[in-house]
Image 1 (cartoon, each protein chain N blue to C red):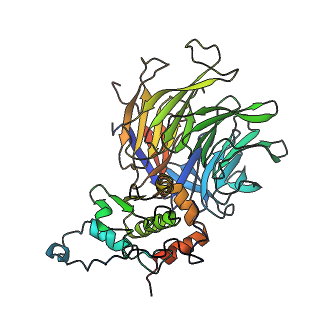
Image 2 (image 1 turned 90 degrees about the vertical axis):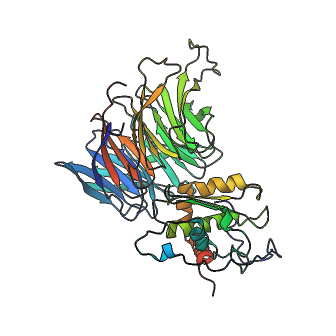
Image 3 (image 1 turned 180 degrees about the vertical axis):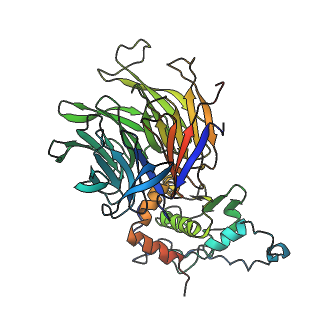
Amino acid sequence: MVGGGGGVGAGLLENANPLIYERSGERPVTAGEEDEQVPDSIDAREIFDLIRSINDPEHPLTLEELNVVEQVRVQVSDPESTVAVAFTPTIPHCSMATLIGLSIKVKLLRSLPQRFKMDVHITPGTHASEHAVNKQLADKERVAAALENTHLLEVVNQCLSARS
Amino acid sequence: MKDSLVLLGRVPAHPDSRCWFLAWNPTGTLLASCGGDRRVRIWGTEGDSWICKSVLSEGHQRTVRKVAWSPCGNYLASASFDATTCIWKKNQDDFECVTTLEGHENEVKSVAWAPSGNLLATCSRDKSVWVWEVDEEDEYECVSVLNSHTQDVKHVVWHPSQELLASASYDDTVKLYREEEDDWVCCATLEGHESTVWSLAFDPSGQRLASCSDDRTVRIWRQYLPDNEQGVACSGSDPSWKCICTLSGFHSRTIYDVAWCQLTGALATACGDDAIRVFEEDPSSDPQQPTFSLTAHLPQAHSQDVNCVAWNPKEQGLLASCSDDGEVAFWKYQRPEGI
C-alpha cells in the first residue's frame, strides 16, 4: 500500500487547521420504514450513516465533520447492488488518503450484504495522486493482502471505532 | 445461451472465506482449490458428487492465492501472501510439504510449472518474477530474478511447449521471457490494456496468448517470427507479438481470469460481475484478425465475484469455477447449435 503507515498521531499534523463542518441531524422515520412487511431498500442516507462517524486518522474529528464524506457524494442502487462513495481528502497531498479510503471500504464490506459491489474513490480533482490511490482501492487483491497486515488492520480498526 | 452452460454441482470449498484459484491435475481426476482460509483442498469425484479428499492446512500463514500441479501430477505448488511458495508431494491421498521457497519480499501472487517439469516460475507484489530450477533430488534453486515490471506482478504462465514465460502486471502490461546464454531475459512487452492485467492463457498451439484485465477487455495476441509472411516487424531474432483481437463490451466489471480449453479452443472468463462467459472463434475468420463470438453467458454463476475458471484437461466441456463466496462450481459446457 502507498505510504502513510507510520504517520498516525506523531509529530506535526499535515493539516493543522482543518475546516470543520456541522453534522446533519438524525433522519426522520417514514411510515414505509416502520412497516415490517416492506423490506427496507438501502439508500444513500443509510450508506452515509455508516461512514459519517469514521474517525480521521490524524484529527479527533469524524470524516463528516471534516467534509471528507458527504451524503451527496454517495451513489447507491439497491436493485443493481452497487455503491459508489467519493471522498474528499482535506488537502491535495494528504498522505492519509489511501488509509481513509481503506477505512471507508472496510466499513462498507463489514456492514453491507455480500451482494454489493463497492467502489470507493477520491472526488475527482481533489488529490495529487488520485489515480494511484483509486487504483489501489479498486484492487481487491491488494486490499485483501493489506488487511492481513495486523498493524494496518489495527490502524483501520481505530478509525472505525466509536469515539469515547 | 444460458443453456450452453449447465450447473453440475457446487461445493462450499472455503467456507466463510473466498476461494481464489483452482487447478486440475494433468489427468483431470483431481481439482485443487485454495483460498483466504489459508488452506488448499483437493477434490475428487465419488459417484456423482465432488468430495474433499485432502486438506493441506499447515503450509501457509496467510491467504493461499494460487496453486499449480507439476506436469507429472505428483507435486503441487502453492503461492501465498505470506511471501512463500510451498511444494507439496503427493503420496496417494496425502500431501507432504517437501520444500518452502523463500525470497520474495512480500505476497507471492502466482506460481507455474514449465511443461518440462524442471522449471518453476513465481511472481510477487515486489514487482519481480523468479525462475527456479528443480533437479532429480527435488532440490530447488533460483536461477533468475527478473525485474522488468514496474508494479505488482499478478500472474505467470508458461508456454505449452516452449520454455517461454509470460507475466501479467498491475503496470498494465504483459511481458515475455526466455533463456538467453544462461540467463533469463525479457524478450517482449505487450502494451494495450488500460489497467491491471490479471491473468493469461496460451491457446493449445502456443501461437496465441489471451490476456484479461481490469479494463474489462480480453485481448488476443499473436506471435510473429522474424521473416514472417505478414510483414510484422521483429527486432533481431526475437519474435514480435501483436494484438490481433480485443473482446470489449461483454464484461461489466474486472475480468479476473481467462482459460483457454486445450481440447476445444473455447475461451472462458471469470468476471467481477458474478458471471461466467465462454467465447469461441468463428471458424471462417481470418487467423490474423480472428473474430470470437459469445457462446455462453451465465449471469449470477456465483453470488459474488468469479475469481477463476478452469477447463478439465481430459473431459471435454467440463469447467470448474470459484468465487469470493467461497464456493466451487462445476459446469458442463456445450457449444450451442447454429453458431
